[in-house]
Every structure is written in structure tokens, then in C-alpha cells.
Image 1 (spheres, rainbow over the protein chains, first blue to last red):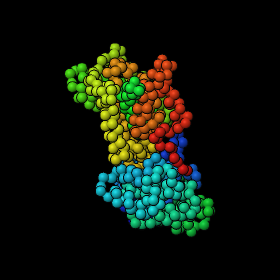
Image 2 (cartoon, each protein chain N blue to C red):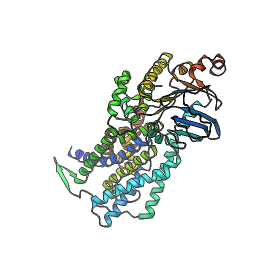
Image 3 (cartoon, each protein chain N blue to C red):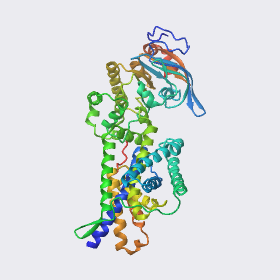
Image 4 (spheres, rainbow over the protein chains, first blue to last red):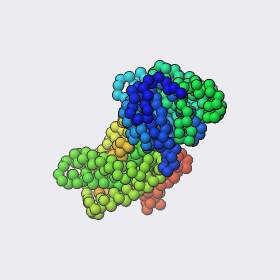
Length: 253
Length: 294
């Protein structure tokens, strides 16, 4: 299956080919003695929306955690052509990787506005205030609750807050871990509608991990299917969605 | 009545010192989410640094600044060497709290090795004079303690509520994983929190040492009052530490005077207060109730 127009083939030689924003090859990671990933390869191009699908326990979350430096990993992770393996999460934020972890991870004892402000920790430009206002306009419900503690908001609102907080660092790549988790279907659709608008307007690349395959394939341009720590399928999201065999075998829909 | 006022004012003066120690505890709590049982010993240690500089001939104010800087380094070092290697306080809160108890013993032992077991005398920063207000005598030293406390509260308030650094420290205390995911260098900020708490403790030590005599047990009772103060005020509230400190100081001064049983048990009012607050209002007077919706 074709990958989306990168032009240059990287024949697994580990040399970062021009154009890829993120290039992961041979990534292995786990927790203690439990190995979860066994040589994952994937790429994300600038501005591209890519989804990693897979069942519970396939290693989706672990993949994101390894990329953002939350857990140690082996293999290669190149971001903007430089190796970032072994970097701490806060160092990666400076380089342009923002991670919205599963379960959202808003700072519940800070107000909504303080959450956004802390999201701009790595920035020192003078557009922070206007960015905060921008997100309050994009998500009016956050604006109405700007002085409220983040922990007192509903799940959907917290997810919107977590996403806009991550975008406050003006990342080049947004790692999103199951934004639909624990949300009602209607709210999930709203979150994805917003995400589509945001990625189109900011040009931020997204690496999304999701169990809700149909929703994710609608949103993404390309997809990988992870099974037991290995990538088993990759291709255009539309193709995957149209392939009944794949749908049945891997996506359970 | 005058007698009562006199005792009350003495208590409030003591309370300012309890509040300072409480401030250090609140600062650690707000930046790491932990109670630091070594807070008093860190303060004792840095007060000895002040004493050493003063006895070497430095003017008192310079010695205090030096002691605060020294205390900051002790606090930061303690974090780097003893606390950080144990692990993330959010993942292993109990392990880290036990480390602070170990630090309590370790710092006490280190101070005995360096400065010996004899009590040293330290002059009061504001002299031994007093001023009479409405027929009640108040020592300048106590007035000075209240002013110093006010200045410190103001500085910490500005730090936590109006600076990027303070906001980052609060984020780390609440959710260190999220904090690192927005780019905050968590270990460095924890180190800063420990350093600041120890520096504040220095000031508490400087005010209390002239009364009690500077020995390695300087802070052991005072810390209990400090804990009582922040329990009453709320673990995460700077204002709470101040109000709590004053109330604890006043109660500990007034109650033994009128209820004879407390004469033999000077700590009892503080303990009763801790118990009562935990029973009836666990978040304290000014503490934030833990709110979370899942």
C-alpha cells in the first residue's frame, strides 16, 4: 500500500529521509521485564494526520509514551531529522512534540486559564495571551469556565482543555492518546470535529491512537494497525476503511 | 484583661515563628505534594550556618542572608541526593515521606557532628527592647517576626500566583506527569521548592533561637506547632499557614495560663487542635477541597 506522497523511500536504513517530521524505526519498549513493542516502524509527515489502530493491549499507548520520552525505549526515533531517543518529555516539548496522554491529564487543581498558561511554559514570545483568547474563542465553553478549576469540568470539556493546552506550546506534532475514551458518542464526534478544524487551520501534524476505528479513519489520512506490538498493516485511511477483509480481521467493525 | 492581652500578644509573636515554619511546609507541599518531616531540621541546620557566619564577625543581617543561601543549598542538595533518587513523590509518596523522616535524623546527626551538642546563644535580631501599647509590653523582636512573616508571605504569594515559575511549581505539585508533558523540567522545579522551603526555615530559626538557645533540638517542638498551624490553615494555603500559626501560638500561650492541666503539657493544645481539625474540617480553614470529576 502506498504511503502518502513522501517521494523518497527510506529502505529501513535508519537515515532520516527528507520530508518526514517523525520517523520511528525498530522501536521496542515495555515496562520492566514486560516487552510491549517489538520493532515498530512508522512515519508522520509535516501537517499529516496519522492514526494507529489496534485492540486493547496492542501497544498503542506504549508507542506514544515511547515517542514522547515518558518511558525508555530502544530503536530509532528521529524528529525533524535528529535523533530524540532518550530525551525527557520536557525537552521534546521544546522541540515541538506535545502529548495529550490517555485520561487527559489536565492539572485539576489549576483553573482552566492557568492550564492554558502553563501549556505555554516553553514559550517566551508575546503572543501567549492572544493564543489563550484564541482557544477561548474556539472553545466557548472553556472561555465561560476560565476561572473554574479544571477538575470540576465534564469529561468532554477536559478533553478540549487538554488538547488546547497541548497546542499552547505550538507543537509541530501532536500525540493524542484515545481522545474518545470515556466520552459519550455525541461528545466524541464534537471533539473530532474540533480536531479537524484545528489541524486544518494550524497545520499541526497529529499522531492519534484510537480504538474507535471508523471515527479515526474518517479523521486521518493514513493509518497503521498495531497487533501484539507489531505493525501489521499500513496504508491510506480510506483504503483501510473500504477493505472489508481488513475491517473484519483487525478492526472489529 | 491586661493580663490576658499580654499573654495573647506573646502567643501571637510565637505564632509568627510557627507560621514561618508552616510556610516552609506549605511551599514543599505546593511544589511536591508532600509533607516534609525534615523541615524543622533543615531550618535548624541553616540557623547554625547563620550563627557560624555571625560568630566569624559578619553583621547579623548579612549572616542571615548567607544562612538563607546556605539553607537553600542544603534543601536543594537534600532533594538531589536523598529525595529524587527514591522516585517520583506522586508515585511513591510513602517512600519519600519516610525519606524525610530519615533526613530528620541525618541532619540532626550532621549538625551535632559539626557544631557539637552545646547550646549556642544568638542575639535577637531586633534587640531586647520592647514597646508599650495600651499598657501592654510587646518585644520588638516579636513585632519584627510578624513583619518578616508578612514580607515572606507577600513574596511567596507573588511567586505562586503571579509568575510563570510559580504556576509551573503548582502544576508540578498537582500532576508532575502533565507538567513534564507541557515542557516543565520537573526535577529542577522540585529542587527549587526544597531550596526555598529551607531558606524560609532559616528565618524561623533566627527568630526562635534567641529564646530557646541554638541547639540541635531547636526545632523539634516548634515543628509540631508548625504542623498544627498548617493543619488548621490548610496544607496548600499560605494565608492559612499564617492564620493557623497565630491561632496555634495564641492558644498555646493562653490555654496553659487559664487551664492548669495544660501547664504541664505545653504541646497538648496543638495536638487537640490537629485532631479537631482533621475530624471536623480536614481541608483546614483555607485549604482547597479536592475536587475531581471523572
